[in-house]
Image 1 (cartoon, rainbow, N blue to C red):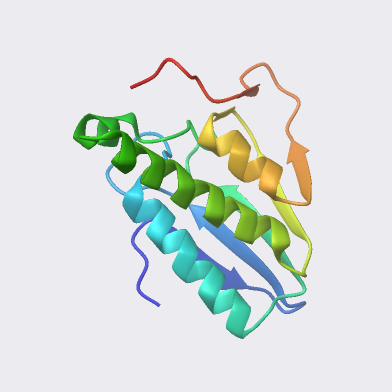
Image 2: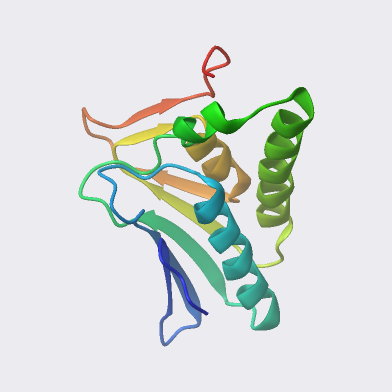
Length: 142
């Protein structure tokens, strides 16, 4: 599996560690390529289910800042917007439905689609420090 933004490691206990570290970016955002890779990662885990899955950030601070809003500028119709939103929902619903336990390890900002991804996990562990912030999707973006 060739991944640019995610790494997937399995430890001796069968736990899978998915680390998001969006290439060439200071923060993790959810764009088309990141979501494509998450789908491929889930495909791999479907073939060989782990004992559990932990999702974490590879960035020094921050989990996921939300959607890659730069991609919003390329949406040219209501149908294209619905397709984009439905794709994210389907992927997060797929994550929520896996049979093994899932955990989001949150430190720093966790906003919008990042929080939606975390909520799709069965468990969330949040570091209690001043920089940790959780927020729902911003409906006025785009």
